[in-house]
Length: 270
Image 1 (tube, rainbow, N blue to C red):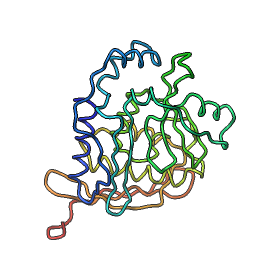
Image 2 (image 1 turned 30 degrees about the vertical axis):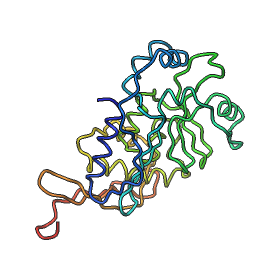
Image 3 (image 1 turned 120 degrees about the horizontal axis):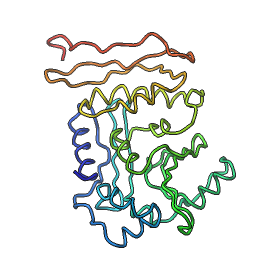
Image 4 (image 1 turned 90 degrees about the vertical axis):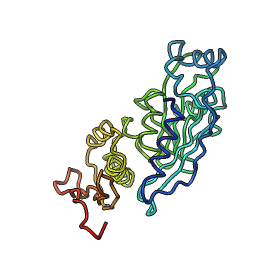
């Protein structure tokens, strides 16, 4: 199944989940555009000829797809606007730089980065590094967070990035798990809290997907903490059940207390 069809499948999963509101769903209905000789030359000029076949199943039928959703209580949410790879590579670079970044990153941002995916209005985006004038080849992806004045390289290639984006259904901040940023710093407190909520809830809501790699990376975050307890509805073969999200204290070590998943509710209260 090609990538765009799998996006449609994930959207249907969201639509069928209780208490989820689909705010935006712009996917397109046409089949993916075939990879032309010009497309292959463009991709090969940036990533090398051996990369062309590997991205074929990740091309889109439109210039961009845009999906946004949230639960009724807004504790869980996600949004992504993903460009077709060919549109990204052939398009313009970022129209701005950030004076809060170190000079070398300002130069990189102004000369070599092109937006691949963003959450519109959030100040966060992921960009491909395309050396100026195609002077050299690069397969680097960079994550930019305007609110925290961060521009960080990602330990992901293009295919891995878009796969994780889909797995997380556009939920925020997971990109930081693939950077060298110390998420134990207090500036990331609210972000780590949201990651905690998301990585506890998604495997319950969507048990057919494997979140273990992301959970392992999250478990390795030093001093992670969460101050929020929420309830999400999980689905089993027989009934819906209530699941409480993990709670840890505010100290810089893992707290031993954590909530447990409750049993199915008594009859008459489901």
